[in-house]
Amino acid sequence: MLTIALLALLCASASANAIQARSSSYNGEYGGGGGERFSHSGNQLDGPITAIRVRVNRYYIVGLQVRYGKVWSDYVGGSQGDLEEIFLHPGESVIQVSGKYKYYLRKLVFITDKGRYLPFGKDTGTSFNAVPLHPNTVLRFISGRSGALINAIGLHWDTYPSDCSSC
Image (tube, rainbow, N blue to C red; front, side, top):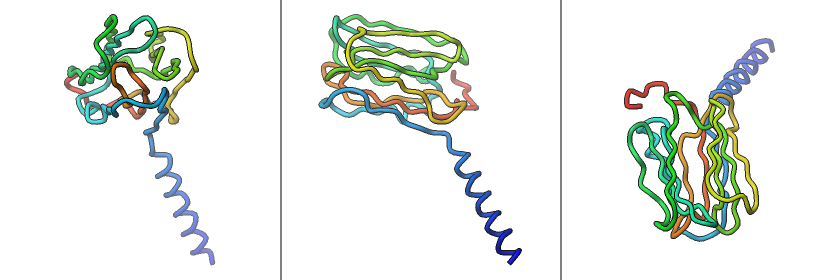
């Protein structure tokens, strides 16, 4: 009987460790319907997010491009509007993303672990606020849908890459 109890305790402990080891999480998709799907899941292999380009017009987030390590992702979205670009400091990471949408994405705010608040777009629509589910994780890549505008965005969180010689 004691052997069975010890075996059950050992299995429960191993199961708890497996659950604790999980670090990835997802928030979204925030926005309206339509557009073509995009994902930067492969780009995260180039390194952590080091810069963000956002094209905005009078009402909407028009386009997005993210730099992973030293490599820019493909641009998604339309070509009308002003292009804004923000570079993260070495070792700085995005730990929260908030924004607004109505049919299309209208506002994005990236908040970093260094206390920087990086806003893009207009302050109207339905609000969202995305943070990682697990502690000590950061924004690793984005996904969503786009056409002439950014229809929707998804946010993917995981640990900061431990070895990044290209960053």
